[in-house]
Image 1 (cartoon, rainbow, N blue to C red):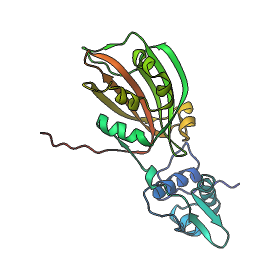
Image 2 (tube, rainbow, N blue to C red):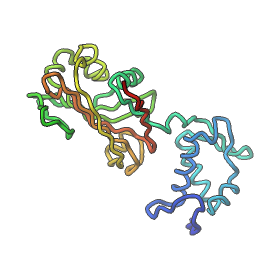
Image 3 (cartoon, helix red, strand yellow):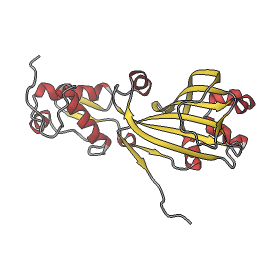
Image 4 (cartoon, one colour):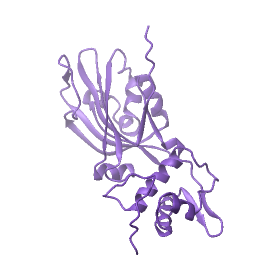
Length: 250
């Protein structure tokens, strides 16, 4: 296959990725932003080739990637039609209060990937007046919303809490069970956000490409006695993260 040597006019050049992959990512971004809705037809291949200064073969390769993911359907004589709505995937809206966080957990389905007892905390910031519990249950979990991975979690739960409802903690969102047990009353909670790239194993679980952007959130919950009862490193797959915060205080 002849290599396309022309540089796309509207896509930043990425020396590590073939041109058809760069164009695929840009088209994906437009679909996530809602430029084309379900039922709409994408511009004709010659039109896209002219826009991106690419060959027809390159454009077809880009569209083929979208079709493999079930986002578009290509039909001879009809064109390329959008068949899947990606707009809901554009944002990861991170909760900024415990109440909001627990509310978001109502729609997720957790799956435990592995579990260890007698474990230590993951790498999370701990205040000078705070301390770790004697022992934790450490779980790596994958949360889904529908058929799509929502987040990948490495969490540690105080083993004393785990023993009170072990089967529930393994089947349901941990914070939801803590709330039902009253373990979130009077606690201090915080989270720290970082944007980084996904490692190979993380990308496999989240169904994204290695090196794709993820939002990493490190959360801790500390009880009245200053003991860290819950700590988690949570990865959300998203190129765009949104924080909605009310800056008005009483």
